[in-house]
Length: 137
Image (cartoon, rainbow, N blue to C red; front, side, top):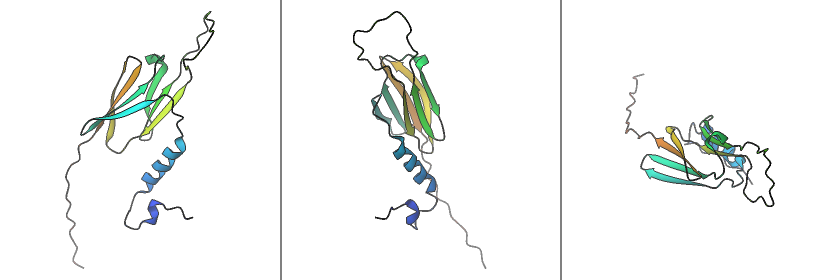
């Protein structure tokens, strides 16, 4: 079976970067933790919400790396005198990645009731028509 790539389509020029992003995303393999929602809050904005119960703001980091929004969580080790008879609340580290399209910017982030909200905005598209002049030979 032949693997089709965007380069296989002669009318799609300059999409090699998109193909690399799709391959990188497919290899990401997030394990489902922590669960998250993505909602569209307007025609040009989105909100990603992660369930991060038990994490403090200092335990979380949000970065944009090569057009990828990366959210990491790592709880500090509790070395107190606590003795757990049962530990059912996950305290493991995580990393969630979201590929951002060109023109999508990360706005503010806030914690609310164990949920981390990250707001994204997309630049409004400009209607551009370009006329190319033909040189006389």
